[in-house]
Image 1 (cartoon, rainbow, N blue to C red):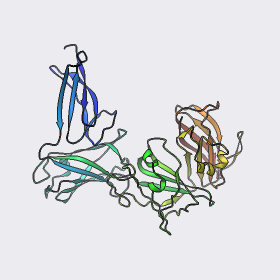
Image 2: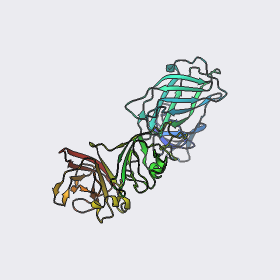
Image 3: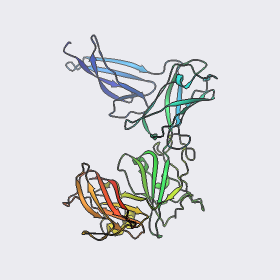
Image 4: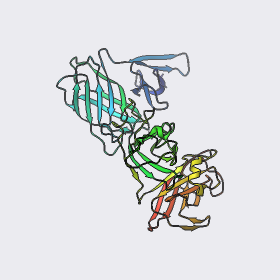
Length: 446
């Protein structure tokens, strides 16, 4: 029909489906779509996923005659005698960045003794994270390990850390011969063996036997927050005391900040001083867990991909902020351990958010109408910059160097705020007369 210039066509594989628009090309309609090999699909994205041996089915239904249907099925499988290869992405120096890909050929394969140059082997190498970011991968050299194993050395990107849990990995060899049989090669499986690593751990120790230590842990790459929070800190991290070799340093510890976003770059752990005194510097830390976002997918544990990170004591010039909990749920009470640690701040209130302030240099007192003795003030802003709450007091706890701010999740008219992310701006001055401005985001759920 000359009046029809485009048609909507449904596309299906065994694990995914979506639609595409075909344009009028004269005697037929045509269109393009992006496809990728995977074990599971990502709903809602524009990529049609299929497994290695699969079929893509295109169906057009006439909108005027529902039974008038056109259907075509195209197989997606390696051609006969194709060599199926597994690729394992490595971070051999455990700095959080890809530096090598190991290609494992079938045992019956025999790689050529003299391989061609790396520029002639790789056709494309690209990794795309679940948020759509493309990770740059540049092969620079290759090593023939044995007749069935090939290592390709990558140029590390010093500015962009690699993210575990990519959404799509595309590794394609060119047609340049690599094996004695000169068969085409297809990378059918890509395994993530470059788990996130801890880059920094800062300890704010308690000053009495009944107060909590705060441990600020930073990661080399964003970590899936819900998966990390599904386990206890003592299961997610390993600390070994230099004297007793006990791994119970985080026994009964709790995560202070929950999930302000799906992926987090750092986490705060409140430790139980009664259970164990953490000895800094000599402790070891490493990722454990059952998720590829918290551990290598093939089960590689430290020290291969989890370096020993010395725990630093909080430096004098550092000031750290933490939100308990984050996000705050209006109907959910504050954890009792947090309320105890910040009793002077939260008083008898049970709901809301506590912003912990750790500073090794004491803060100067100021006068606020809402408090007889405060050590600074904080304003709350919404996502578009409107002030929601003004001059919340920074109050001292009974622990040296630890202060806190309480927000009841209400605006200046004493009404609960809506869902969203809010910005707290704290201003204070230490006893050395250094003016300090710190910011932290607070998530709110209702």
